Every structure is written in C-alpha cells, then in structure tokens.
Image (cartoon, rainbow, N blue to C red; front, side):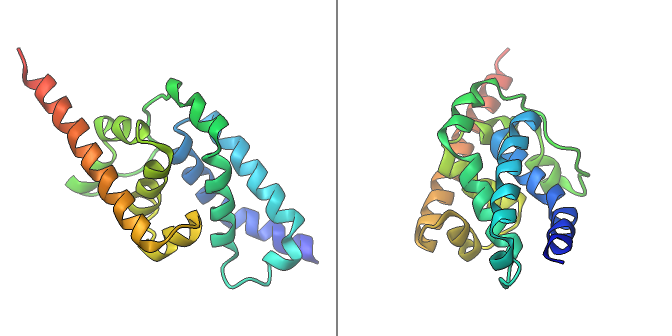
Length: 165
C-alpha cells in the first residue's frame, strides 16, 4: 500500500520538481537527473517521508541539494537561456520571464541562484527557503539582497549596451 502513496506523490509533485530543477540547472535534460535522484531518495525513505507534515518540502530540499551539486553547476556554461512555457499575466511576470532577466539569473553563483529561484519563481517564504537550503533566514535575506544587486547591475549593463548606437 505504501507504493500507491508514493505513486500518488510522484503524480502530484513531479511536474513541480521538474520545473524547479529546470530553473536551477537551466536545461531540460540536466534537470532530469536531479529529479530522478530526488525521487529515488524519497522512495527509499518513503515509509518515513509519507508520515511527514510536508513531504513535498522534504523532496524540494533534496532536489535543491542534488541540482546544486558542482557537477550540475559546472555544466551551466552551455545554458540555453530559454524559460519553461509559462503564461505572462502582467508586466512584472513578463519582466521576470524575459530572456535578459533569465540569462542574468542563470549566471548567478549557485546559492544566489537557488535563493532567487525559490523566492521569486517558486514563491517560497524566507523561512521555507532557509529550511530547504539548510541556512539561517538572515542568510537568505543577505543572499537575496546580493543576488538582486548583482541582477540589477547585470541588467543595467544590458540596458547600457542596448542603448549604444
């Protein structure tokens, strides 16, 4: 009967896990390996995980750890800069999904990228991000601040380059 619960969990959460992995790795093919590793680890501990208050949060934490291991980040030099298919409902959503912003996010250091993805793309709170990454909430705040400063600088550079004749 435990397998049925795991199958239901995978059906309910795999799309979200794939999206998060894609946002962290920047590549559809590279996102599959950390998701598979995550689901394998969750399955192996399913008896315990299924009794947790938030098994999806546990899986997300494993996924972030898997996706941010150095082998995934080293390969990020070949990032495509394409975003997943998502609707753009308003101006801020269009800005957040523009290729310029996305390319700047893909060039952030691993921890900064993870914080940006979890906060602004996955809409997690600072406390939830701290839990996922295993860091203090204050570190989430300072990392998010550093990331937004870096993104602002990168986008300002793009705007300057785009305005030269």
